[in-house]
Structure formats: C-alpha cells, structure tokens
Length: 337
Ligand SMILES: Nc1ncnc2c1ncn2[C@@H]1O[C@H](COP(=O)(O)OP(=O)(O)O)[C@@H](O)[C@H]1O
Ligand SMILES: [Mg+2]
Image (cartoon, rainbow, N blue to C red; front, side, top):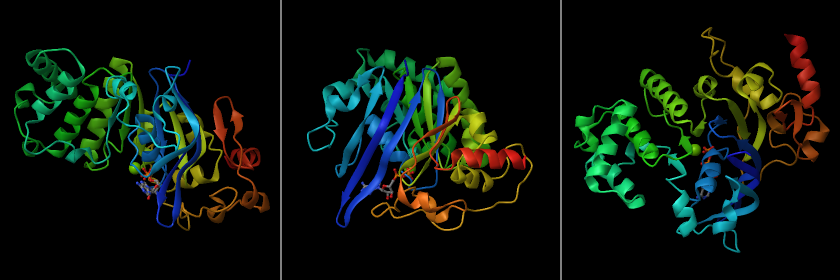
C-alpha cells in the first residue's frame, strides 16, 4: 500500500477576480521510505499541493475535488467542510500533523521566533505533542542537533546567532523531532549558497535513509532533486505533466515541458550545457489555456492540444506523461539519441 496517495486533487483560491486554479487535478503516490521530488517553475502549484496534504491551506483555499490518502486514511474526509474549506484545527488532523507528516516550510530561515532560544522552540514542539518532561525533550533536541550536524552546546542560542545553514538544519531538526513517517521539504535549500545547499541535501538524504522515512522535496531547481529523489513529478500550471522514477524522467523524458525544463539547467553530470529557456511565460491560473495548459509554449503543439486535457499515458512501467503525443514524442526523442 502506498504511504501517500493523492488522487486528482484540485485546490482553487478565491480572489476578487474569480478563482485561481492553483492545483487542478494532480495525482501521484509515494511509498514508505521513498523520496519524491516535485518540480516546476515558480507559481505552478507545488506549495499548494503541500498545504493540501498538511491541511494548512490559507482561508481562501478550497478543495474542489480529489482525495488524499495517508496510510489508507482519507485525510480530506476528516477535516473538509461542506464548502471545500479545511478545518485546520480538526483534532484528528492535528494528531497526524508533525507526528506523522511534518513540513519544512519555504522560507524556513525565518521560521524561528527571534525572541526565543532555538532549542526552547523545538522543546516546546515536542512537549506539546508528547508526554515527556522538559528535560527529556531537551535531551532529544541535543540528539537531534547532533544528528543534523549542529553542536549540541548551541541549544541555548537565539536564532540570530545561527548562520543560514544552521537555521535550516535546525528547521530540519524541528521537522524530525516527533519521528514522522513523511516529511515535506518545500524549497529547503533555495535561500542557501551552493556549498551549504549541497551539504544540507546530503544530510537530508542521509537522515532519510537512516530513519527510513518518506520525503517530498519541492523545488523549482531540477538539479536539486536529480541526486536525491527516487521519483520525480513535474508540475506546470496546476497540473502534473510527467511523473516517474528519476532515471526514467531524466533519461527517457516523455513530455515537452520536462524536456524544456531539463534543457534549461546545467547538466547534472557536470558538463555545462547551453542554457535553453522555454519561450513565453506560465499562464495566468485564473484563466488557464484550454486543453493542455502548456500548448501555447509547446513546439510540438497541434490542434488536439488546444482542445482536450491530456490523460496520463504510461510510456513505460510507472512512468506517466500527460501529453497527447507522449508516444510520438517518446519515439522522436529516442530517435535523436
Ligand atoms: N492564498 C492565495 N490566494 C490566491 N492565490 C494564491 C494563494 N496562494 C497561492 N496562490 C496562487 O496559486 C498559484 C500556485 O502557487 P504556489 O502553490 O505557491 O506555487 P509554487 O509553490 O509552485 O511556486 C500561484 O498562481 C499563486 O499566485
Ligand atoms: Mg512554493
């Protein structure tokens, strides 16, 4: 059984001009112990997917369809109100959040309250959810610090005494504090310099393997997930474009958007490729294009692409492309090799 199964999830935001279709039918699964990278340009709906799973949507966010199963439990059923909004104070969800599913937030560098010691803030998170004494929690925080590579004697430091990389490590310690089986890391390294980025990623991978937890790493930077993910989901304009094992998506790319995205990053093997960008801009999600939302920017687009939304085509086992011409593209790209 999959640990997490997201099925045709739709999340829209109500704004003055109408509805932002931030997530408009996204499906994927993550198994126990697996790491999935969720990638796509800024604004394509990645964080919204994460907030739907952790049930921390802003108040103008509505679930417009779909299901989220975690360990077989229908999460939305627990907390969804009749109008599609989520009750984030729902007790059952609060039991699951942090203890079973935790999240490292985008911009986590500022997640700690500047007036309290970092250690105390993690201790509080532990004692809030677990029946342990402050001393026991303090020991746990020291363990966690050691685990993520912060010397335990830093436990009584204030956030401003930590470097960016240390704050990020402390945030990871916070996310791990209650031994969750699933951690979502939203742009965990975006604010860091490249060297610290590599170190933190390596650290996360080590922890993930050691703790056998599942992880979803969200990033706009494909090179971040190339090395650390078992599988990859590529999103564009609120939809999944392609999903599969990392090697499948990188080697046997079967969606024009993914091909463009990979082409616009330096080669992961170290050889510098020319940076090609995809012409045009992502669409306005209030009025997304008809059919496949990528068609206005797609060099392969034909009539059908303006008409119907593509269904998933399984081009090889476990590798799905949401392109009308997935099979043709597959043949074409393989021919070029
Ligand atoms: N609370 C909100 N109200 C209205 N629009 C929102 C809200 N939150 C996010 N959006 C919009 O939803 C889309 C998806 O945003 P997001 O999930 O943050 O994307 P990503 O994480 O991929 O950058 C964007 O167009 C964004 O502007
Ligand atoms: Mg985001």
